[in-house]
Length: 133
Length: 482
Image (cartoon, rainbow over all chains, first blue to last red; front, side, top):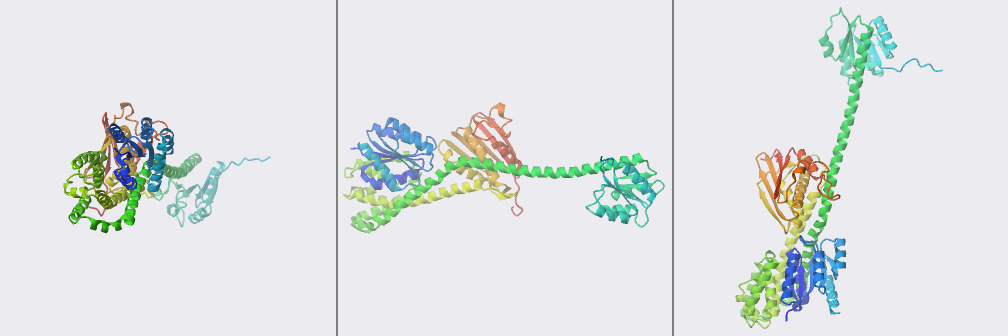
């Protein structure tokens, strides 16, 4: 009964609100939308959802965050939940970090802020496709 | 065979005496010793001679017809080009010889007649040497002055390159600090435009289709969303409020999909007092109604986000500009010290955000004559050191005190403190506790020099858990300020 979840992680609330708006506009009732303001909070949310048997399908995460950076966070997620589609969204391109995330977190893609809506949806849908196989 | 018996000239000496016999004696004494001598019989001839050939020393008789020695000397000293040439007076013992006058017109010594050859030679040698040394001194001073200017320029360049290095480290964070607001703006504008293109024109028909009694309720719902600023609620708070709201909605079995409805209401900023809006939620078309309300209210949220994002980006750009500006003038300008400190805090806002508590106590300050860019470097250095000392976790306290004729800025961190054994080294150039490549070690040295340039002082007090650097600056203001 529970809807699959798309989780957005960014230290800026206004980014989270905008992402959520775009996703709700595009996907509507198909998904539930969750947001978290840090990697730490995101982990809490992931665990709560797991307990409630709710399925996270997609995580979109910022890279430059005060505590744990996005690449490290996504690598940790990948270790425990390899089947989640992981996407990095960054205002600052640290090439090493992106490489790391591609290699060890198997991210579906890395987008740069300001991001194009269409591009974001394309990457999400491509990722969801891979889950079907 | 070349017989070079004539030694090179030890100097050019001009002799002035109206008695040819005296000229001859002196000529002989001096020429024998290798000096080049020019004898002249009158003051007039002497003055003419110096215009064509500059002597290194002048021997000047006093008693002469037409122009006496004192007058000749005065004329010599009046001309800047020849004033530096030492003048030795020669007088007969029997003459009335005014030593005071001799020195006052610029003579450096006197010889009395009859004179001993050795005495003449000794005095001539001494004064030539003195004159030569003085000239060397002038040249050396000029060289030192040049070197000083060069060092000043080099120091300025060093400070600038330190600044650029610090800037380089900040740029990474700054790009993020600007791109993030841009991302929000871009996204908000996209959503607003899509609504205006696709859904706006549907509104009149939609509103008409609402039952008459639900129309004001719909408008009230919108009104309520306008008063909320969802950015003030954290994600955590929102989740909690959503759970509460969801439970409340589930209790009413006419409301479908309570979870989703609750999510949407929370996103709109509707956290409680939901009962008045139940009719809308119980309506068969509740999904459509809620969607329209959500989209309309989001115009407001989007606009507010754009506003905030623009301010945020402007602040960062301004801070960056202030920080990177190369101050080419040597003049102080009137500036607000607190603005400078706030500029630096803005540039570090990303690093300060989560685990650092920033406490500020700002006295009210007048604008002060200073070099604001260089003071910004001071704040940057001290704040950066403070953050590193705390490992980006702790409390940063900035206390600015107005003490009538001086300003004191205290920057305190809650880090482990400065060890006893390095306390007196930290201001030394090239001293650093960081690993190779992580810092030039020039930071505090440059900070010190900048503060000295402001005639200020820097000191620190340290203990585990509390280290405070204090910068005091004298308050100099522009004249037209009260």
